[in-house]
Image (cartoon, one colour):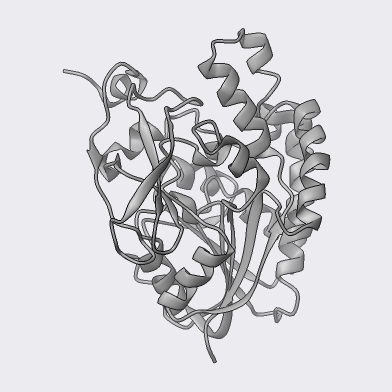
Length: 323
């Protein structure tokens, strides 16, 4: 009998897949825009299709892995389970300072007794920054469905609720701010998750979303299959300003702003995926990774130019529960 660990490492077997509709307009009128494999973790031998909805423009994975395959498509060495200085060195230090600055900018105006929740908090990277650099009187909590992520976060002394926000029995209208940082693209039902988060917020409370941008030059250049934002098969729904705004409207959230921010990651991984697929030597492939200071620095400067034009690699949406 094959153990779960062996199953996770068996890249020669196929995943159980399921067909889905567009989560924004709930239609199946879509065309293929990209095709690829799990270039990063090689968790299966499946080939995956990125589809684009004719009605609204959402890009989504279809068919995609069943939720029963989560332990396999998120293996034990998945970067979000242990994004630490030991594993990522100088890159970790730089990202820590940058993310702390961003988090505090999103928290401006919060009262001393504010409650903040990070949905899809992973190993607690952002919660830990809020704990260290934010107001010490804030109540800071997280949610994650991964037992590995929850365990890693709790080791840092963070309060994390294991499970999904739709099923947890948290107090409605009790939080002032919610984060979904690089989370919404991983979700099975983004509309239901945002609706659940909206109910947790006090009237006027805000949701900050950071996710990949399908209206960026890196997407247009690499969308045929190598785009880093596909993150095959883990990114299930991918947005631009129009589709994120439509999703917000669907669940009765007001759009405060949707802008773009700089990120080198999709540029770096788009090149890495190309090199992997073309069987370039490992030493060259490793020059393009989350641990590569040189490539990340170069593409940060590169993407900054596009961010000035409103075409940065990441979307930053701020949504609000109506008063």
